[in-house]
Image 1 (spheres, rainbow, N blue to C red):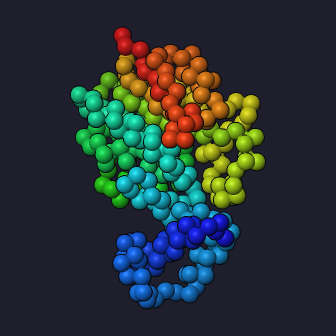
Image 2: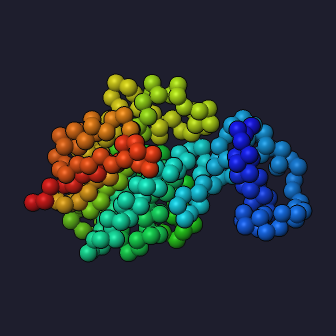
Image 3: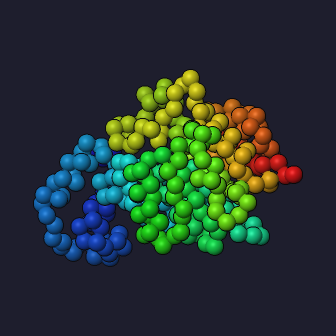
Length: 279
């Protein structure tokens, strides 16, 4: 069920917390403490873990930066790479001299806008997703951390046929200062290299793109940014490590400038950042 002792320890701590409602610290401070639990509940959890279901779905929670987000099989489990993306955007927002309008496209669990709204309050945060279930989960996370995020159901691949007012931020000139997205970017041909806990449980429409057009979301979002990003505003992407150069070229072709491909902590091309040309 688990490959090493560290995974078993993580599972034991998560199970202890679910049963008692107490954190990991209590388990460490009181290692001999007896707890009462329903045998049926414990058996169910163990059986789901044996089937390689991610712990984040079993316990409906995922650690992300300083937060514990509600998760389920309708949204992707937040990854460490996305934590890096959030911190990159946070550092940029901290330097802005006026209240910004910030949009996350394909929000899933809402981990990006909720984290940013918690770290950098006072700005206006927006989030798009095509999935009603994902938006419901994102709402739960925003409420959990008392964050104001304007969630909207938007098909970003069909945004050009949508009502313009439904895509624009409120109470300004209709432009965003920052647009962020971690869209689907894993190619279908890469499925063979993925583990069963991902393939069998995480939503495929939030992960995979066809090999014939792996940048389909990046193209649509970059075109959206060219229409709705303020001059001097920034577009941030999490990207497929194999498609850094192609992503940069696409962003430039859509009118972006100063495009940078940035490596993650594992030295893989993981982020693309670009600016809307100033007037």
